[in-house]
Amino acid sequence: MPRVKLRSDEQVLEATIGVMFAKGPIDFTLADVGAVAGIAPATLLQRFGDKRRLTIRAVALSNRKFATLLESAPREVGVEAVVDLFWSLTPGDDDEATLAEQLLWLHQDVRDPDLNKLACERADLLRMAVAQRLPPLAIDPDIAARLVEAQWCGALQQWGVQRRGRLADYVAESLAAWFDLAAPR
Figure 1 (cartoon, rainbow, N blue to C red):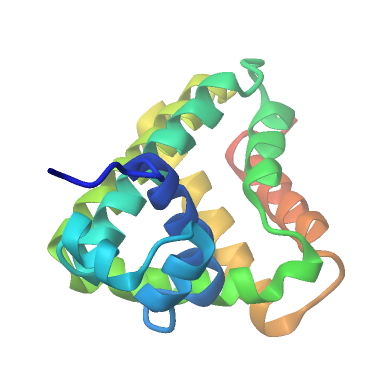
Figure 2 (cartoon, rainbow, N blue to C red; figure 1 turned 180 degrees about the vertical axis):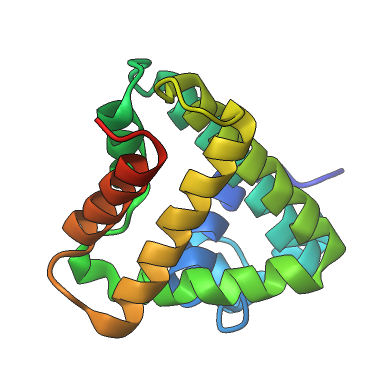
């Protein structure tokens, strides 16, 4: 007779998301996840196969949660709306480790084809949300959304190295400057 699951797969994946994004793609272990999820590492292996497959399932769930977050975000149009959207997605100053871990995830997203596919899906979700909020510009909204996202990513990396002011302020200033160049007011 099969054992009854005390924790659903979704509960385990939620725990995995918290652990893997806090510790990074390389440093988190099945023991870490098991301790948070309240199940043995061997049970994780039985249910998900291996760490890579657990990671892929957790990132897929994270993408679904991200889609829900974007769907519930305010739908105003304009520079402020776009800056506010990115501001809401920016880690806080006191969360420098999260910013550093995001770069390690980028490394994984480039190397692993399944994680790359999920990263592309996440980027597409973000770009669609940005394109819906863009003010009128002289360039195609899809291209503008991609460029604004690139500005955000660049601002995160610059701040991570230089630490000038508060991260959220640095990001907002960088995005506002991009819009001043793209569509002077």
